[in-house]
Image (cartoon, rainbow, N blue to C red):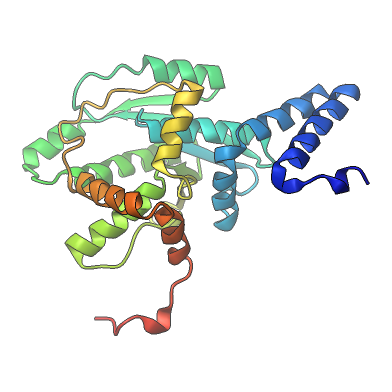
Length: 279
């Protein structure tokens, strides 16, 4: 009767339940359950959206083995950390491994990434491939698409070698929006990438668990948790058409703060009968 009279809108009811649950677990001596409860609540501000995306698109079947492609930037590092949390503090049951590809653009210090994987007890594969020299020999003016294709092929090959059925990448909601505008403005198409894609040529499934999470949230997570970063030596980094789309999206969100949520809703609420005749 007492809790039913609490005013939920004040947040007091939620705090009471949290304290009450922790106290009960402590009294019963169930320290492991108390730890799991504390961890879930501590990270609920970003894990909720990740878990919803995984559930909405049935990304991780029980017993799956996931290989995380880790470049060393905030997105992939955050993805690795988030999947570690879900592996240990959620109902999801899966194995977790990581791979970092040195593409040959310059010297890369992988020490911080190796230290993180050791701390998380996540196996890490370090591989080097001459992607940079391939791109330079071909004289590509816009090499990002080719680089991404080559990198994906390498990661997929490693996934097959280590017996992983799922490959996870750190694409987030900003990437979804920017890819949409890139396709619309430069290719004349209304499309973006999918949260989950089955690759029929390899039998692998590509998953993007962060598609409901903004880049700003990931940057905040990395800072709060003290996650490491690896310098990106790619000479094209920050000098692409995607950067132009970032600026465009930034200007939209400044004027319309709920743009990301509205965009996400629109992707899942398409009025097909109002689309024009397709070419």
